[in-house]
Amino acid sequence: MKSNCQKEIEVPKVFGFAGFSGVGKTTLIEKLLPILIGKGIRVSVIKHAHHDFDIDIPGKDSYRHRAAGAHEVLITANKRWVLMHELRNEVEPTLEEQLGRLSPCDLVIVEGFKRVEFPKIEIWREANGKPMLYPQDPNIVAVACDAEIDCKGLPLLPLNHPVTIAEFIVKRFLND
Image 1 (cartoon, helix red, strand yellow):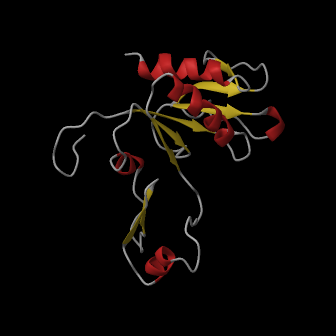
Image 2 (cartoon, helix red, strand yellow):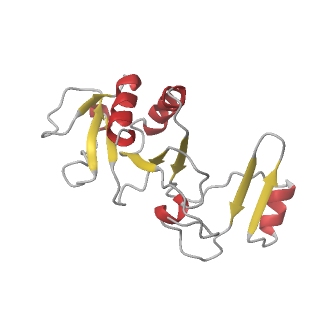
């Protein structure tokens, strides 16, 4: 992959979590991040939202700049910076395009984009009452679940044991 400077950069390993709303994808990622980071892995996260969202507060300067029509607004401070880009009737960028915007890292965890082809761990809870995705999605490489189920040969990971899931991620995605 090339950056805007046409300098060769290393492409990070990418995998995701897929599952219906309410199964605990965000909660699991939140538990996994400190475990992976504790192993010296630099991790970034891409979260796909299926609806309109806003991270800015009405009335603040940055919100007012966007509302006035700015294409991009970059807010910077001594602890963080954020770049907001308004699509303004442009097509939503692909996952690959968004990956190209990230700073270098070892691993990118993607939450969402369940219809895009890249390796995923399905999060499934029996109590959610939704069907499993893996039978129809060949990109699912394991299932993290809170029950004993038959995954037809896929690894079954204990949903409530993030250390085991982190070990699977390291072995599967970071050990070449």
